[in-house]
Length: 194
Image 1 (cartoon, rainbow, N blue to C red):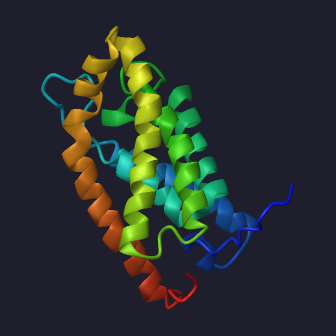
Image 2 (cartoon, one colour; image 1 turned 90 degrees about the vertical axis):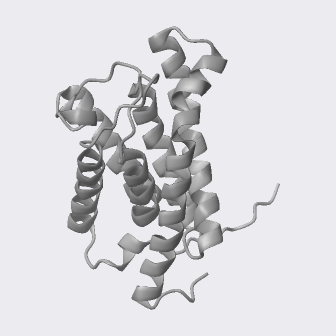
């Protein structure tokens, strides 16, 4: 069986000089950004899951840092929060409750989005939108089953409470990312590496 080589392209973080110290700082900054974005939580009527900016941050971190650093950043966010760092929604900590599955999903979504960005998935608005849609689907794939278990909901009710109220916000976040990431590449002058 032969495999086709897939060329890895740079992600935005690769443009920052340095090596190990850079990577550690970027991983910590990505986790911190996600924690900061979680601090403004807007309750959604009828849903045990609030609206926050952490999903947007997790996906941007994955795209900007690439799959390894993006995954490491989301693992740090998850583990530190589970261990008691109060940087989940509204300064909470611990890995329990209806929202915890979404946080677990950030690890896998950040990894996927980072891998796609490393293959040029963040270079154009259309590619970025597709990359972000896939990242959101991964987050829901972890969040909805966890919500079902945590709140004793059937699948239809979990989708109604844990997905539907967030679709409009997700669309706005995708449009923002589709503008921000290609614009960042254009500003670096590295856009030609598609």
